[in-house]
Amino acid sequence: MPPLREVQAAFREALLGGPAEPAAAGILGDGLAPEARLDIYRHHVFTTLTAALQATYPVICRLVYEQFFRYAADQYIRAHPPAGPCLFEYGSSFPAFLATFDPCRHLRYLPDVARLEWALNSATHAKESAPLDPMVLSQLPEDDLPGLTLRLDPSLSLLHSPWPIDQIWEANQATADSKSVVDVASGGVHLEVRRIGDDAVFRPLDPAPYFFRCALSRGGCLADAAGVAFETDDAFDLSQALRDLFAEHLPVDHGVAARGPEEG
Image 1 (cartoon, rainbow, N blue to C red):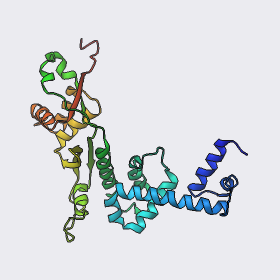
Image 2 (cartoon, rainbow, N blue to C red):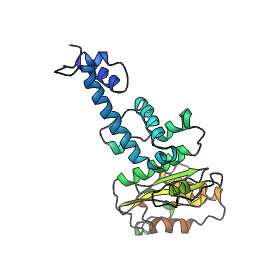
Image 3 (tube, one colour):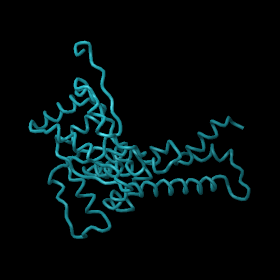
Image 4 (cartoon, one colour):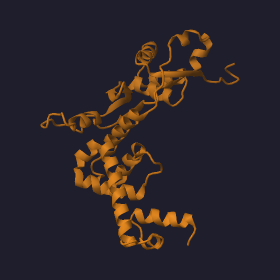
């Protein structure tokens, strides 16, 4: 009997469409050929994972039709099998896969629509965090404010696309007007995706607030985030941007970035 690690590797390869013989050698027939048992299990694995991808990416499925989606899912599963047991965590790299999948590369907006769907999925399953009391900022020394860092709601994602992916998503909901048409050349969008209550939602942002929030979400301090926003729009209102953050209950924690010797 080969070592367990080799048996597991052979079984995994067989499940993903590789040769069945090495894995079948370690399976008892018991009235059904080992290869047939593998086929049953392989079918179950692919059916389950395809259904999980369809549940996460229903708009993509609608855009390319179910038959093509199943073909794309089959190729994706073979190249990117799950790394963990939770099905709702599976498929994070599907948007990147679509961007390089030759049969649909002409649908240039498709990967960004998929990124929106993944962000909605992530928001749905993100951990809950209590919002930060804005009064804590009033307790900070004034000299610390430029170095202020804010950790934002774990459900938050920020997406930019040169395509109107919000309109594409909305036009492909079950309740949408079947006659609605989206002009994919109408321009891009900056989106904020998050969970509010039990619902994952998104909304467009103006560029300056979008890049301000992006900088903060990456751990940037207030001075750096404001600098990015002012580069985008010299009319950016920092005070209003901060008020908006707290009004939306986005900050959940704070800190102060360490200052270099020249700043001390």
